Image (cartoon, helix red, strand yellow):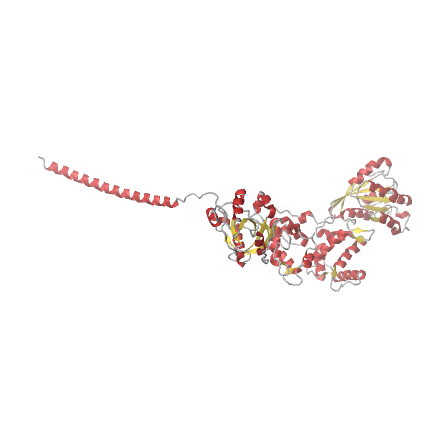
Length: 639
């Protein structure tokens, strides 16, 4: 809602423009002559709206100033006071406003009504209102009698803060389509049980949310009676249906109570143009480099509840009608879903309906690829949280992943795998098997990238969501794109074990794109149900993988149920990549044992030398003793 309003007061000379302004400010009529043009005044107004009122002159020499003031203002107060000035409203003033190219609401005021008390306001003003849609409202006032002065300027303020033009077509006497669409979405969000009616409890919750007070039983019955009177066939005993809910707003507009409609719209985050606020659709949510976005427990809970609420036939899947009803308050399916051929990108039931598993997997993938899209749809679908951040509470940011050879577990629950391999190697069959689709031996070349997402149960019972993407004819462009490669968690190299020329494509691919070696990888020999053949490559796959320090290719077939082992292996390589990186350089010899042996030998020699020193010391001591005894003996026996 606007917090400043600038009102420009226009009209012929002598219609009492300045008197109306003076009467508002001084709260008394000034009978003496007032200066021709009053200076602009600024007053405080309810709802913290600052209002500036600008007086103008209709004299031809002041026309440039008049044009400038009109262009600076938010609303025009057009005053007339007699038959001549009344005729000038439609013959000069309103066409003049249009010629300026401004799109401002006009409040039409008949002043000096004390001179013509018997005029029928509707008969006088309705023809002009029907001819000129820019007229927001009309009022009869008298500065002399202090009649409707405050009301006049309140209408001017309300024309800006609560404009009727976006809501109601006075000529057609109907709510405008954009207003109806907004009210339909609000009805959808308030119909918590999605039975098509707002029961008494839902009406009370709506009233409390919008106006911070409850309805009395009498008020509730009056509302229902008003609807029943205008819509005799409504099933009011079951509650207020969508048609009745929109009728209530139409009745408010007819009674010039459009501020009530705006209160409702603004509580549900609508702007003056009847679009949802950008800050509501796209709250601040930053994902650091090498991190990713995932649904939080609150987010998963919301989408689970939404699925269960719209699965009306309780068959465990959302059919086309149920999906259409669920996405009714949104612009439709997210663009990325259409691009990925939803619902064929995720798990469906035998009847072709998206299952809860597939529903959650699809939203997990959307959040991983485009968290802002998920935030926008959370807003459209009515996610609410008491936590700060609004819809952002439904998402979380993972710990940044580090691209290094020796790292522990990657802290994320949604991972992306690029599946690479030669044409016809069976990549599409992997995606079909991943989504539990029946095996089809017919070859269909993949032109544009194709994506599949599903949950994978890891060892120990933990679950993650795996996104598998086949790159199609965009393979080269994607592999050369640093940002695209950085978003990938693991690569699955595939080759047809029955085609002798298939593995050579992987060798060539790694040679052309050495940056692939910065990603964890898994090798898969597909079509293992067919006869294995020797590959026309310098080194056979098993030897090739062994030489680069990788596990041998996993032999699988899309026709086997054991294909699920491949998805577990790929997921674990993404989450525990320590042993999934190829060795690009020969490992240096491990001399640790040599150092230990050397150390032990040195220690042994050291101890041996010490023993020898001790023996030598004993020998010297013995020799010294013998020489001393010999010396004593010679002294005692001379000659």
